[in-house]
Image: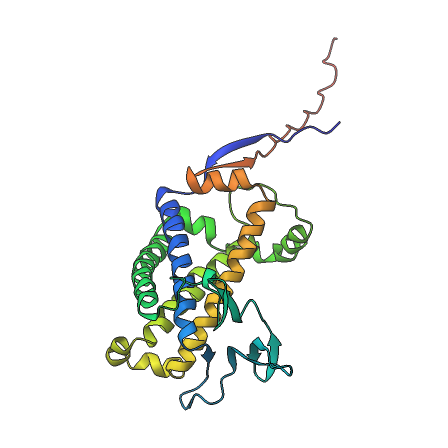
Length: 284
């Protein structure tokens, strides 16, 4: 007969972590939707210092097909993919129009570059300040270092964790597993800072103050392309993160990010070894 494994409730996330998580989730949503609005103003990406805007490696737009009807497309390095109704040529207010990303995916919905930039910059400053504070907190906090830091011997369990994830087996543990730790470290210390610095590179004011940024990223157009690629890597991370939250226990994960409490599998108490018999005493 199968018996349910004993569990106990622990405090997994501090108030600072929970506050950072939800505020930045909102900031990232605003940044993504307003960023797509900005991209719509010039829906093409280029590479290199010497880009002359005539050979984008990625572009979204619309053109007429062989029958003369408008057709949306996504073009990547010469490969053209039809995307009518989703990208390039989509419905807005009951009418079809040329538009890289549809109205439901952008902030604001109408084609409004100036307001989209205001939304983007406001959210970016809030996000940047909170990210810097949280990275410092993660480095200084012993509890946070234990939770997301990779410790001796953990990398040896990477293959085993991949197999467990592939089988959708997620034991409830106090600490993150090695896949979670590597993912969070990549996002926190690589992708998000890269987003901020490439964003600063595209700013004329910062370009004048820190001209070295332009050289580091190979030009403003290259920085814009890296910024766009990182944004969609973050979208991919968010979708995988959401899927794992759903399959590993929605209530437990949501409680951890709202109240801090997380239920883990309790380790069974060690069974004491039986004592060796002393045998019969003399005279018994």
